[in-house]
Length: 218
Image (tube, rainbow, N blue to C red; front, top):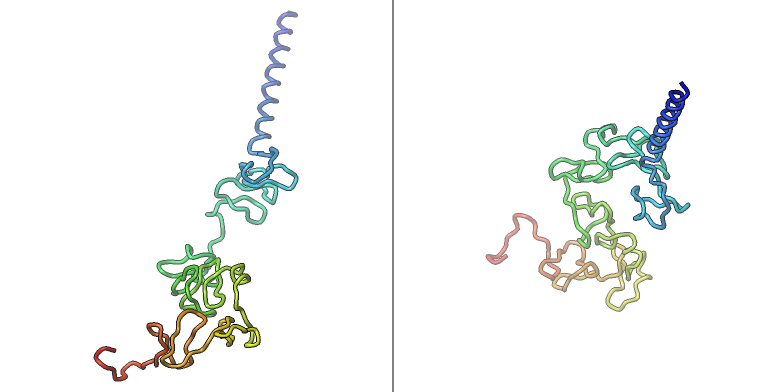
C-alpha cells in the first residue's frame, strides 16, 4: 500500500512539472524581448530605447510601440489585423500608385490620369498632367527631395536675391536665371524664353499656331 502511494506521488510530481514547463514555453513564445543595441538584433526589427527588443505579437493581439505585429499584419486601432480585414477604400481613392487601375497614378489621394515623372525630371509646380514621384516634390523646376532643395544654390524670392552676372532675374520657379528673346540660346532651368516664345533645339523661337504657314523644312 505504501509503495503504491509513493508511486502515485512521484507520478503526480512528474505530471505537474511537465505542465509547468509547457506553460512557460507558451508564455515566452514570440516575446522576442532579448537585449539589443540596434534594430537588426531583433526579430521584430525594432530595438527600444530600453535596450530590449520590441515583442512580436500575432493577429488579434494588442499592438503599440513595444508590441509589433508579425509578418504582413498591420496595427489598426491598437489591434493586429490582416490587410484583408482593413476597410476598403472608397472607389477612386488611393494611398499609392499600386491602388490605382491601369495607367492611373495616385495624386493627393485620388487616382487620376497623368504622367509619373522621375527624380531629376523637369516639372511645373501645380501641374497635374505630369507629377513627381510620391516621395519627391517639384522644386526649382525639378523633381527633388526637400533636403536637395534646401542645399540648392541660386534660390530666390525676388530679383534682389540674384547677384550672378548672367542670372539676375528671379524666375517663377524660384531660381535665379535669365529671360531670353527670340533667336537667343536657351538651355536648362536658368535660361528661359520670354512669354510667347518656346525653347526649341536650344533657341528661343516663336510658337507657331496649328494651321500657320510653314516652309518645307519646318
